[in-house]
Image (tube, rainbow, N blue to C red; front, side, top):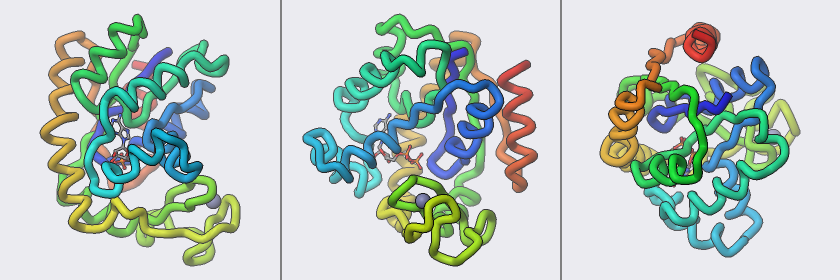
Length: 210
Ligand code: ADP
Ligand code: ZN
């Protein structure tokens, strides 16, 4: 099964991707995580992507489409995958169609902007393993320390308040049109993000299996 998770930054796509991954045993492909790894490794496309990411803008379609194309050729992706954070523009969705990738379902996690702003301001991430936490909703056992690997937790540069506003604007302008794109293909299912993560997960799994 090939799935796409759609939703504003901070809607909880990453968390839901993990839930589906555990249930269906198919890998999550997160272009955000791949780009952050490239930035950290200082690769050529990492250097190009960094400025856009720090500003809350999208990385250019050709870079992102290139890394996605390579990633889905990997052996672990041959029985299906969950795309988290891709496609984010109509040209990216068209590129996926042009590659001949059959998408079974597009699950939109819907969360209102006000909730998003509150969530992102409390988000903390481990720069080492990529695990995410929230000071109120999903605190680490020891403040500022990753439960999974023991490294330090930080606020992502793009979670700074001004950057959050520009990421939301970018989402509404460039990514939200994908809802119509996939609605027209009869693939869109919307899940309302709940206050409680487990409730959202239950709804997401029902949407995926239904
Ligand atoms: P979030 O969903 O929290 O905004 P991601 O981790 O998915 O964050 O992505 C972080 C950043 O990486 C984005 O703000 C953007 O700059 C870049 N990025 C990730 N995926 C894409 C994509 N498909 N197209 C363009 N830029 C992307
Ligand atoms: Zn960690």
